[in-house]
Length: 507
Ligand SMILES: Cc1cc2nc3c(=O)[nH]c(=O)nc-3n(C[C@H](O)[C@H](O)[C@H](O)COP(=O)(O)OP(=O)(O)OC[C@H]3O[C@@H](n4cnc5c(N)ncnc54)[C@H](O)[C@@H]3O)c2cc1C
Image (cartoon, rainbow, N blue to C red; front, side, top):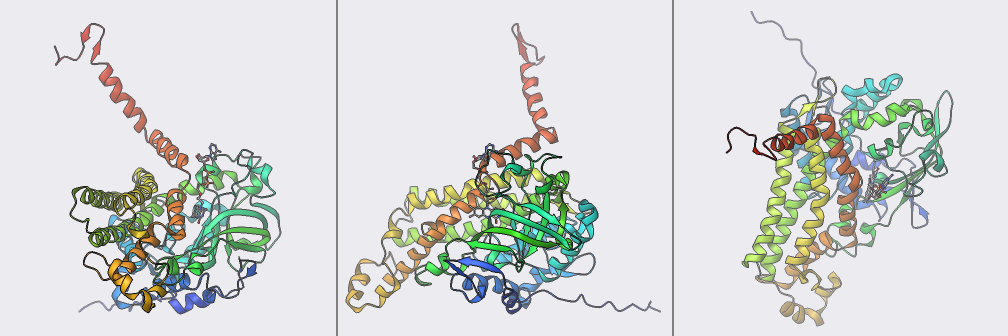
């Protein structure tokens, strides 16, 4: 006789869909753009297609063609995106990698801060909530809230670029600090430099990165030793948005990337903003404010998300390059082929980093595993230098071809220009409209203002260039690697002296 099985309820699916995501943005958030307070972000011409691109990702969570790769359950049975829950094995990390890739392919790799970016941190709160001491329950609640809906979080870790030569406490007129607290929560004032995607998100995560934390001192910096989350509707919180490449895009034909993937960046300003206690993770605790970044596994995991994203962005650019050199008739030249080959080797290097990060992890908090710190650190440095080289290869190989174009899509409909364009703007094996369309896309990827911002992003989003190298050195010292490197040289020095060889196998 078989044992009766207790029926197990299928996990409830509370993941947002696209329409719910768009509606959720209409929460009274204070976004400033060109002298006006934005009403509905999802309808504003500076943001509306970026929000629709994100909505597309949320819809994919529910579509049979994508769902199997995107969605799984955590250990408590909670249904979520595979990177919004902790990984407990290399197989879990592989599943997370595949889910990240599904979303990234829907943006061709052109949005750095899709909701899974900050899931690199939020997922770790499931196992790591204990780190937050008396605020541990808040951390666990935020894990559940984030994972159950796939909330879209932005984060701000960096102080505004002013008075960096002073101690942080001496720049309280600008940097974020606490004004006061009461039985309901804390009140904060100050600014943080750019929160990518913030106008499109559900909440802001506020903390400090490793470089800033290193300059904080117990007994001095308590008022600034804070980690908290603010809902975007928080009163007293303003987003001062930069310009919008989506708004400035002349048409989809002229700016096919900027007009839909401009995730925008905004300065975040708090003016006596109220943060309820349930949104506080670290309060006036210098050691915890300094430690959360290293302890959380965020660093190990965000580099996995970034590396998958950049691999796909590079695959897209290799496609652009292949089609570009075919259109100019240079595809068979040896020098041109060598440049394409370099792009392919760069993509394969990124792929190798991803494989190493998922297949050879290290223990994380609790039972979890995370990509190895040294692999993540090496991948970060490779990535933040890679984009510069990609652009250089485009500049040298397609050279001036992308600027041989028309000012706008209207020229293609102008009868007086028809014969001229057909004759002089054709590509090798391409009619003029198709050639112009291709090079407009290449322009937007490499040379438009959208492209310039991407170059600045790729170089800086993961911390300043010195810090990236200093982290690699410090972590190598902590592992004892640098001692081993010295010992290797000591062995070599011991092979000989002023009398000749000391090594027994040499004469
Ligand atoms: C497009 C874009 C999007 C971004 N999005 C986000 C985001 O979403 N969230 C977020 O938190 N941040 C974001 N950033 C900010 C980004 O994290 C920072 O730009 C990056 O960490 C570098 O910091 P910084 O610009 O302050 O440069 P700095 O840290 O000032 O570095 C510039 C130079 O000054 C040197 N330097 C600085 N301080 C010191 C010091 N104390 N001692 C010695 N040398 C020093 C550095 O070594 C470096 O050579 C974004 C940036 C860009 C460009």
